[in-house]
Length: 401
Ligand SMILES: [Zn+2]
Ligand SMILES: [Zn+2]
Image 1 (spheres, rainbow, N blue to C red):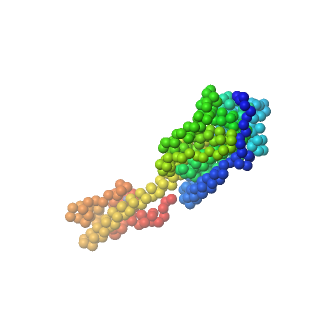
Image 2: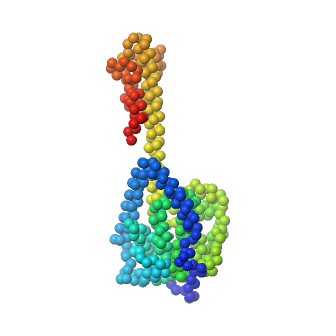
Image 3: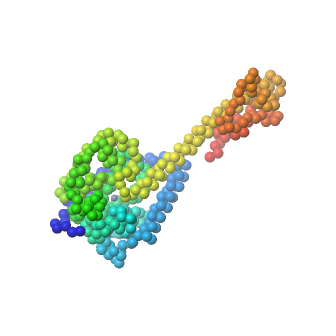
């Protein structure tokens, strides 16, 4: 893929300003939310246990993904796909990455994508084989994509993805932070490629496919972003972890002149609704597995904390009801003993019409009440599920867990 005109380098980009300033602001916000969440987890001991449990599965899943890459994907080096290897070296040098991560090409059934992963302190960049075929191994387009993924690695986004998980899940703020990641990384990509048009063509391939994508009118596609400003487009943008493709093309095109593009207005109602939608992955493909897993972890943690608390409340309510029954039976027992000078032999003597208690009390757990043989006090009456009043008081003071 060659263009007739000489490449236009991105205006105003230097290695120092590739990361957008607002990334730092959002980082602080998301960090505070995450720390509060982790403190809440640590305070509830059971939460800590579940966190360790889910961290284990996260680690296991990540390890298996990397194992899949190592054994099923093609590792790029001097002998394997040397052109792609050379492009990658060039991009690493341009972005000041001294230790290039491992690069793999993976066959993914026609998907056009690339992603970065990290496992046990090592980074990996993966390009899907159809994307490689669509863009070419030594094109500006490919350098843009490789630069974008290296941007994620240089900015430690994958590490942040794990520790800032709770904050990334937070409505409005989490997705906004993720969108800034992608915007910053598009700048890394454009800087790595030193070719704005090539970067735009890579993006247009993502939009329109390998056949027609590069030939599409990028300016017209970028215009969609300014024209379509309805409620649902606004809601889609606010809940998405990627800037919309037309927004990304708009931003890339602005690098031709370096003129800043102000974000167009969104429907204010969309903010209200988006405040109730957690930061999922409604609008992107890369990192979907990781964010889905984090979602599972968080829902699991919330359930893990809520379910025992709920059960405890239910149990103590049932116990209280049973204890009230026993108190009533005990009073009847004592009254009987007072009036008859001997203890009742069975509850039948206490319960019934014109007796001490009209109808038999029911234990909420289905236990039945009995007077033990030789009982001399109403306090000895026991429930087959809960025991005596003394048993219940002791259980309440020394919970079994
Ligand atoms: Zn990305
Ligand atoms: Zn009971």
